[in-house]
Length: 120
Image 1: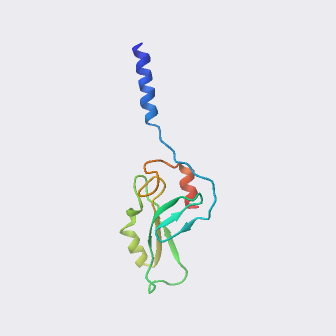
Image 2: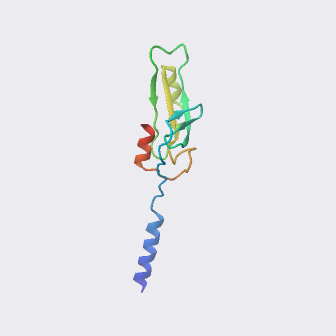
Image 3: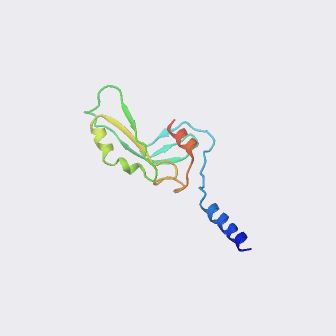
């Protein structure tokens, strides 16, 4: 009887540790950048940090750096390198990926497919 009860408790504890997935919605838009957000194909607006080079530094075609933060981080990870890269002539985009930083559903893992789709 005790073993059965402990087994049920263990199952409950393990179930509580399972990740909650946010998922990817249906494609309905072209991805777009605004001054403060990146809108994904499925319409999710993610907070955006952007650093652009001064006009005097620009030469030739625009060179873009897509700065993707790591797990448990957010776009502020590039607060020092973003301005430096901009001063060197690069345009830098860094957004809070799904489930991180100021984005919707913080703490919820969106899954690899959703993260890859956002970058494409």
